[in-house]
Image (cartoon, rainbow, N blue to C red; front, side):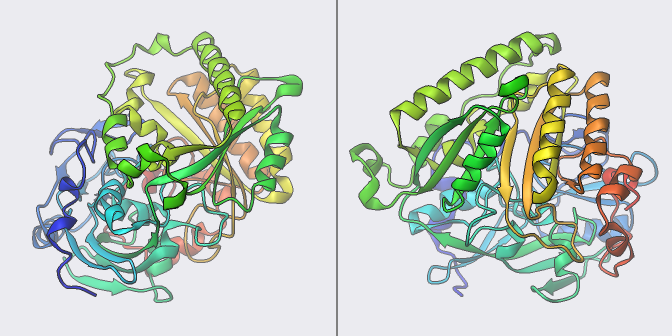
Amino acid sequence: MSADPGPDLDPRSAAPGPLRADLPAPGATLSGWGRFPARPAHLAAPADLPAAAAVLRRQGEGIAPRGLGRAYGDAALPPASGPGLAVETRRLDRFHAFDPQTGVLTAEAGVSLGEIATALLPRGWFPAVVPGTRFVSLGGAIAADVHGKNHHAPGGGAFGDHVAWIELMDETGALRRLAPGEPGFAETCGGMGLTGFIARAAIRLRRVESGWLRQETRRAPDLDAAMDLIEASADWTHVSAWIDCLTTGRNLGRAILYRAEDAGCDDLGPAQKLDRWALKAQARRLGPPPDLVPGFALNLTTMRAFNALYWSGGGRAERRGPALVDWGRCFHPLDAVLGWNRIYGRRGFVQFQCALPPETAREGLRAMLRLTSEAGQGSFLAVLKALGEGRERASLSFPRRGWTLALDFPATPRAFFVIERLHRLTAEHGGRIYLAKDARMTAEDFAATEPRAPAFRASPARARAFATALARRLDL
């Protein structure tokens, strides 16, 4: 591997436009991306790895690793009681090495996936797995073992499947390197920062010919039709569906499906060839954060109007046929509006995301959508995906073979009641909850949905000096 990544690997010079968003200043009130819960917290942002080691040694306990703040709930917040410190990686953002033959990148934990993409796309490489936002740190992607639209596909899976090694720092500042198959590696991928402070990692990227994708849009009139269409699209690499959560009766769970493949050079039109890596397209898409929206502006009437317009737009896209879309529009559509989490107003929002096994998924998802619709708490950011095989031992990694449904709700008492019911339905149907999105699960619900928790809790890899609000809430 090259010791020098090259002068052109600076992610900030790869393209215009922001590559990070909404980073808190040290000492600020902290929250996750959902802005709920939010609380004053001590925060450190070391400038380099020696400084990080000094911070960890000085703190010694109650350490909460924090990346770029994109976990939705309290996974990167220190516990509300007792000594605690969030140690942020935003300044640990150096690229250390890149091998242009194998696509293996070594970088510090604070580098964002967007920075990796914009720096290495011009060399023909892209992250193998990307979640719904580019503003996720490398360390956060490993700790949450994020997945994307290609989990079901060959070469997809979860982020940890593409990690060559991890350098983990303990509370004494000591570093140790973990590789797949070694003790502690599996627990760290999906361990939500509870096995230590991820300092650096080496990851394998995938080859691409351009920054564009060939995307098809299809509509499905109900949940069964949507799931059938997703199953029929299993040979497509990137597949997901938007679900209309406010429909009932025969239209329960109507959906718009998006499926895409990487575009080769021969697929590009004249405009795309002028922007082969879609870096200029990213700069045009990224808009300023919206003004804070009053909470009453997001209600059942406005959500019904949005869903109707979105459904209609899906019909127009379906009639137009296949289209070339840039990687940001395909993988990170919400990033087009920086700070979109503010649309829920000052109260913030919470997300529910479950994974259900294939044998119970249709019944379970139908019950969840019926509950959501009847409660008038429909989410306009609802996503359904099929998942491939997951890691079932040692790790708390979220993806498992089956289906995943994600729903956003305003942080209100009525929505909390619905989420409690959704947690029970998840347990009844043998599913699990995504810890990177959770802010409301109880320790009892966690025990009912996560049979791997006792093994993780007892594992030598569970570093007791590292504690988060989520870990305290779930008795981890």
